[in-house]
Length: 161
Image 1 (cartoon, rainbow, N blue to C red):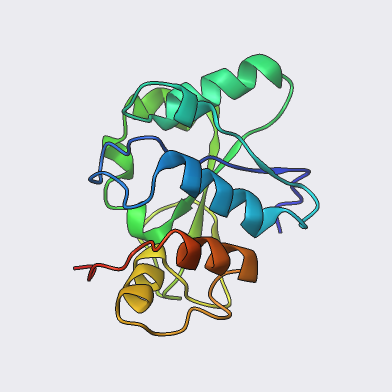
Image 2 (cartoon, rainbow, N blue to C red):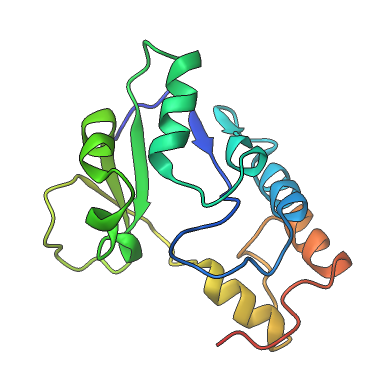
């Protein structure tokens, strides 16, 4: 649909909208690298983990743009983030710098004007953490290499609310 040459995954150091992550930055980076290692065109950018928090998307876009100044940038945003999108740091600048694309989960009609990509399966990080905490399988939810890291590091053992 979008014809992207590359998809850049950026783990946040400190999200301004969430509490501290359950897994360390190093482990989250390892899980992300393991999840996409065999997918052509998928790359990991760790600039937010190297900067002091909070992690703002506009800062990341500006940093990447300095290296890739001719590229057109799309910002893929989960449907669950749409209610707070306009409150993101320096949103007006961000909206001029990128083309937002929403990753839809529900298939419901939305009240925004951004293009929407409807995913065929509904997987959320929250659901994965809940499954791990309750002892349920996460097979088919994450690649085996990611599940191995979660089990080895004993992540998400406490019940997620």
